[in-house]
Length: 118
Image (cartoon, rainbow, N blue to C red; front, side):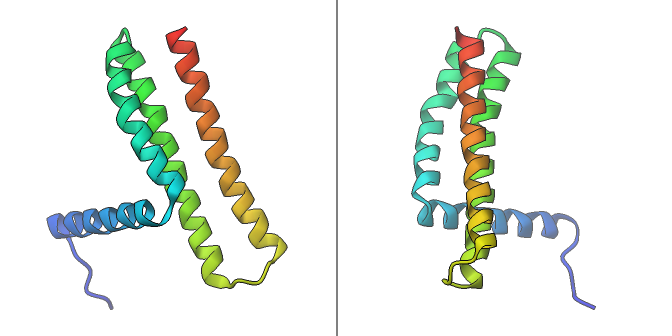
């Protein structure tokens, strides 16, 4: 049986793994870097332009949603790439679906911002 971290140690360990994942994604994925920099503009804008607390939360939430989906897409790509360099229809489909998820999250961001701000 594996010796697993418990309590606060488990929380700190999970935090370290999460930061390691974010750093890895930032270093290896240009799209994630672009979205991080965009979020540094959009989040303060959301705080300024949102008229109510609910609007501000929604504007910020969709920004974070894009980042979350991009991290998951990058994870899918890493796993597929780990399997091999040879093209396989299922590997291509998995990468395309991850990309589609990112695109959908970006469309949700645009629609949410337009509805709230216009």
